Image 1 (cartoon, rainbow, N blue to C red):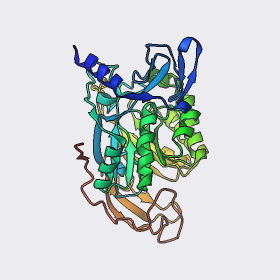
Image 2 (spheres, rainbow, N blue to C red):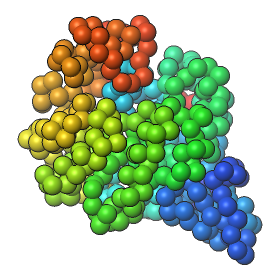
Image 3 (cartoon, rainbow, N blue to C red):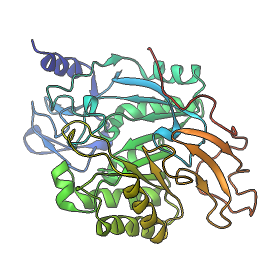
Length: 371
């Protein structure tokens, strides 16, 4: 038996009935899945686009009871720059994705069951074990990441319900290819959403397996629903880096809210795009300036630590005081007071704590967790 067949069998054994909010009955015992924007109608014995949600005898089954990867990460790595700076997130992922990006940096987990090379062994764990481990490591936040958490939202909610009992902040690192139904389902248990805006071209989005309008609707709806939202655009040379496209992205985000943090991050060769050049510092700077000119008050460059001075820092938009100084994922200084600029008292939007650390405790590097 091949490794991919073994993995498929193992994953099928670690499932739960889908949350009722994320499924609708269809004709001939088929079911419609509402976990992502594809809204797959899944026939008996078949799986959806993600390959991990499937119809067993008329019941939609969803992943549960395992984690593909677990580690302690700086929240800045997610990246959340306006959430508990200098603190760590207990990060866990599962397997599968509803998109198939050729440059995916987590393809070993996200493309499981779609690419025979993507073999990532799941580690069996209960929701209680994951939360207990987060508490043991003193992590104030838990984040579902590494694959697409929307397609494993049923399990994440089971975990986050228990995390809520310990007053942990909970988040998704997502491609944003969501439905209104899944956003409503996760909202009571999820505080944070990092959403990828991969392009402003529907043609490009369809190459990745998604629909641009679905992601744009998710961004606007998530803000309206009260999630804390930060947006990431990976600047891929020749794919989404023209001035015209960057302007359209920045102007859209500013129209939703000028206070949304926009992270413009550097591509590095990976997966099926290993022969493409790394994003230059000049391209990142151009995207940064476009975001600021569009009216966004908080724009950050990423994946190029220290290359662009102050472009990783949080700066008061009213008086230009440097509030949080960073290099990469490491917080070097934080002078905010109760979420405000100490110089002019401007309130900075985000999820803050009353007495934050002045700098990161560690070196901003992940710690792997053994369950």
